[in-house]
Image (cartoon, rainbow, N blue to C red; front, side):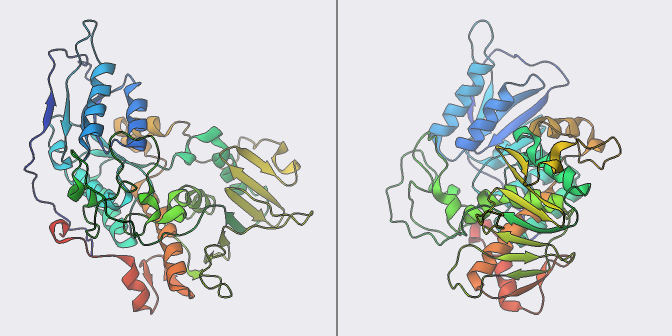
Length: 430
């Protein structure tokens, strides 16, 4: 079991160093950042932060040498002075060395999900502020350990649930309309995402030179290398590790971590969760139709939708059904079945969510002024990820489950409680 006492041994790998005599960053108010995981998502974050003048990227880390070298070159080229000499940035193959980087303020974590808890726990223990991609964890037990570790360390934490801040603020608007009663009493929420995770049965491939496959696996069960999990070199797609239960939670946790997060927000349940999980009993092996029931009576249904007057499904990322109407929110916009619901803007007395139009800026502002807080804390990220995990467990066990959101345990169901954690490989045990 992953516990809050997790402690990792010191690294022995020596860091790669990109030398430079140029120091482009002398401003005292710039925050120094390190990047752990620079695949497709991490590289995107790196590019975004490199275009900011209020931070300096000083270190990068990855288990694939080509990606590590490429990220260091991106940083050096961006910060090169007029002479064209690349700026100094250190490239670490082991995250434990990066966390020891002198003067490092914060880290951005964009590794596969099964690594998040260890990385965040170690970074918080090192006093580094953290931006970590969603879904926040691989299982519920390590999520609780992570949230507790962050709370104890008092570092500023942002979960990468960007839908709270970005995408035209469509999701934020939907939440505010719901909070202010535009659709009456909220009754059901329908979440449009794909299916649960599956076990990995990929065939063995030869490990590419420059790839530390053992490190990539980390706490996950040991298995042979396959490029679907850890692509060769510098890739531009999102790898398939997210579909396999050893590393992630399928589409339920991939995009589900975004949409379930918005649903939790709309229900004002950021620090809690459902009390019952009901899989579709009449559909053995089904990958849609599972229902999560909350103490308020609200039901959240996975990938099944209400019918419109024309008999067709009202589909969307997040479909909110209330006693007086329906709001559909997605990355492409927000709409209501009755246009009048969204016609009038909310007045000045309306209840509002935290103002944030840029997820990265929100995090950096909170680091500089901690009282501001972030829009998606470690506790919030853990609770939203827990919805994904509970959904996957419901599909796996295919029976009704009672959940205690305060104790974070299934009620009177020890077989189900065994699904809440896993024993990591020996070298990554506490």
